[in-house]
Length: 570
Image (cartoon, rainbow, N blue to C red; front, side, top):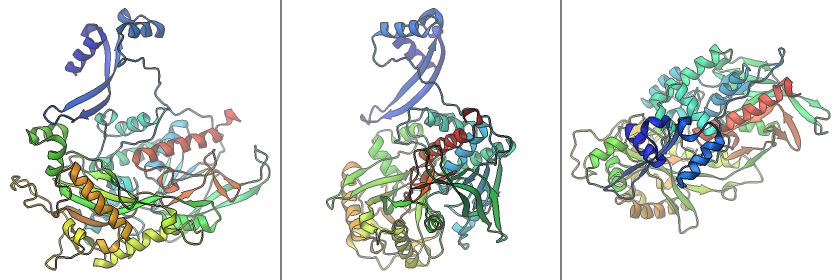
């Protein structure tokens, strides 16, 4: 910090003692010159009044006198959840799902003064980790508590990446990051260009959020699978339209099998993109759904040192990695068959994991721990899929059927074991008959030679994996685009298209294939009739794509609920 303070004082033409406060806003890496990699900082600097004057106007005058376009006046105030005056007899809002969207909805409601009830079909994160570890070791899949379902949502067992491409003018990105820090994340996520937490750290953060919610009057009900809702027909809302008002949420206790009912007037539907039975129930009840584009493909694995060398250069590589960490990458290519192929959820020093949630269907994902130290890089390589590719008879759930067909093919190949092959086999369409079954956690050990980056390379899995024909599981247009993309990416990262790279399949749940139509007030509809009080939100509703964007959509949806509950506004 001393060096940053010196640089700031030089730019501001003042003494270091004139700086009252300095905070890092942003830190990125400039690696265009591999022999001179730089950190680039954006700083929030507060000077004493004796330098800038006592008002915003005098401060602006001081900044203008510096004639440096890189120095601007900060006027944006941090976001805080507004306090609300709630009816004493108001029914408690219900949140369905405890992934990033549901958790941040809960935090925002608590901060406003509400005391929500959170329904989660899976178990608490500690129990969920135990069940997931057993599944990786060969135990039977629990369809209600797994990589996709349980406290924390699918993002818990991922790399924990928090970067997002959404534009945020309200300070909600910073609010989400500050909240993660508040509950246990390292402060570096507040300013790193590509912040990440890691599965091991996320587990503790999620547990801390639960304690905060419960200590503040909120309630969790685990092993509670959302089954439906009740509503009443109403006449003339504030817009002069007939509407329906939600009156209760129904769920099944998956441990006892008993059906339960919670009276409520507001329910946030934050189930995540894998709650396929929820989509089917909503469709049967007439809730308006529409198909949407998504992407499917494979996971590719390389030695992490191959990626580090391409991104950082070979000179003093170990020193660079020690400072910068294992390198991520982001690749995109427009294939000759007019499809987009791109890297997704890239996990430096990570693992490919069995992320299945339905019987007889297999899908995979990537994850890494905070240290990112498996020494193997993996990323999804996915290809865009549109409703025109899968739509049948105007059925908005056709995308679900498309995903399921891919996952059934992946499961059938090896009876539920993750299938993989080398990129050489994938490209040639020929399987090596000498391929043998491998167990999970087979990673490059620290003692092996680095003279050849591929020497001793072995893919890293969580869950059992074995050799199989991955190419045969995919639509031809997906295979064509992946092959075209691998060649293009090999020109950017030398060795990326090496025949020894490992391809695993299938990656089918990059985002929801369905969007739950909602009004500008964020409420669901049945045909043209508003279902007041039912708020679809997050990835499962088709309005987010990642931990941060899902969390932000959860906060915004909670604000809509707070606005409706606040009696001071009505």
